[in-house]
Length: 131
Image (cartoon, rainbow, N blue to C red; front, top):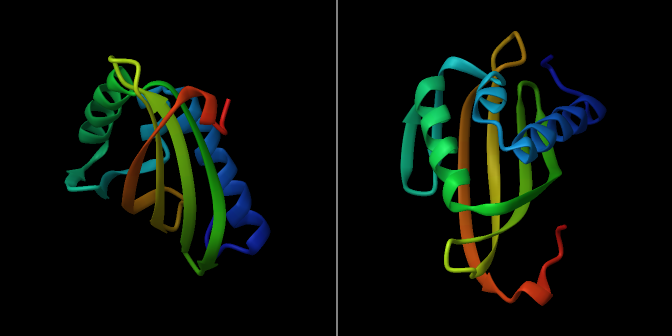
């Protein structure tokens, strides 16, 4: 729960990584407020229902998805995260995505804002780092 210490911020990050790696949109959505605001690349989402729809579509396209999140900074009810993830598309092309997220939490520890900036890099399967 906010305000976060470095230790509790890192715990929150690990819980998020574990949830996303489950590739279960319903599980992931429960970490967000009912009216959570997201910016994910060029998309703007509002609320759990849109989050579930987005993640369902994402993981249908991004096969063998594997994510790693790292602590960057925190202050009060906010956490900044660096991440990378790998996946392949339906044509077999592997990708590594790099990005940063800024998170803001409500008093109950649910994320009310998530702003993600993400860049993709085509890679060969032999160059994968996350398994």
